[in-house]
Image (cartoon, rainbow, N blue to C red; front, side, top):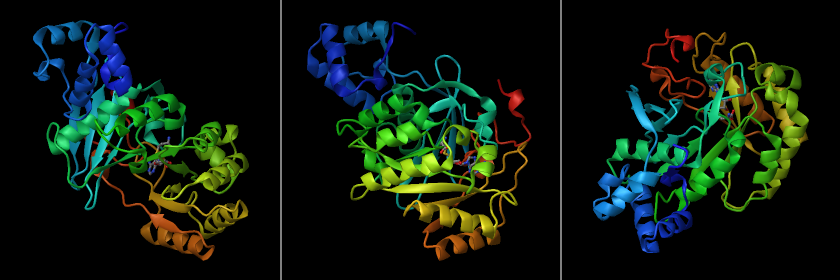
Length: 363
Ligand code: SAH
């Protein structure tokens, strides 16, 4: 693979230069960019408008796709989970979530994850590696082709969320480059305003994002209102504790421009972080930092063998009420694709939909 250039990871100008270096005219580069990202073709053979000898030349030094779909699972609620493989045989998971107004594709930024959040199944894989820009882009191409047909678009349009496996802010350069490629109007044309990226709290990258012009919406995962509990649930808190995290969040909030969204996520774990007192602590904490961001409560998604249960619906409602009484706007996220292990925190490269399969059986 080393000499072979992965074309879906090149921006349009980069692809034009690459093609010119091959001794071809620049417009061919634009044609190939459109073939990859607008027509969503996955091989040079499918680009029948290119001369045969050019296709042969490309096959020698480049590739139009590297991810392969190993399996696809379809939920009762029509959510689709794709278990894919990289060229070096690592798992990548992507979730397509049909919605009334718009569809959402949830992509992964890493194969596995290094963060070890105690309530998340992806942690059990450990970090295999960060994905390249092209591997991020390909996930969207694959999911759209499957859901809409090759090269076809949905009238509803597609939103993206960087909430799959991995910590997007530890794959920051890949992420930003993938977003730039996907925003190109001659390609997928998914602009950053249609994208939300979630971080467990990588403070330097939150601060960096605050300085970037064309950026996605941001979500920050909290999971606890105190350092003591958050460090237990999310070890990243030892490196960037709540005070540091929330002061970066405040600065980010102050950088928000019209139409940009910033939210917190809070996974609801029965008897662990879901009491009225914890809701008050969370409300006070956000108020003390002058944060106005909304909070999204996420009922925990079953993740055997993890020792957590989702908070009961009434508990989540009461938690929400207490937060609202503190002036914090709060929403409850509806779980999607739980039955096929496609919901938040369930991406652990499971083959099949059987929850009894243990992660050690996977490799
Ligand atoms: N690493 C990033 C991206 C993952 S996004 C982050 O931590 O933000 C996935 C969201 O789902 C995060 O808010 C995470 O806290 C939450 N989550 C993880 N495991 C979960 C589970 N089993 N049930 C519900 N939510 C979970």
